[in-house]
Image (cartoon, rainbow, N blue to C red; front, top):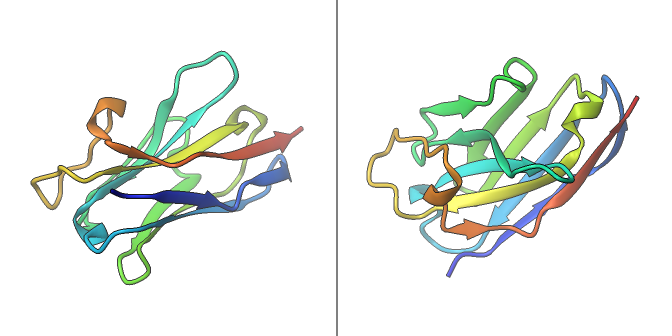
Length: 128
């Protein structure tokens, strides 16, 4: 069983920055692909960014490219999402997710169904 705990959310003005962290339990974190998703009220939960378990491959949604950066520290069992130049439309609950079934070190899962563990979410609110 894998437990994911997000932190770092909060209220920030437009143009500001936040860094989300997701701490994972389990001794095989380094073999999990990891992703960040977000869900705004009344909308679907969509992928924001994802990273392969090797860390060598990443994916970003078009809406966050150039502003968000995903990274992982396997020694700390933690994945991060650095969010810069935040916009009001980035307001959402952000979820960390793990895919423990990835077979390829550079594969980046992008779909919700590919992830089998989820955190509880952390609220990010960007004021205009």
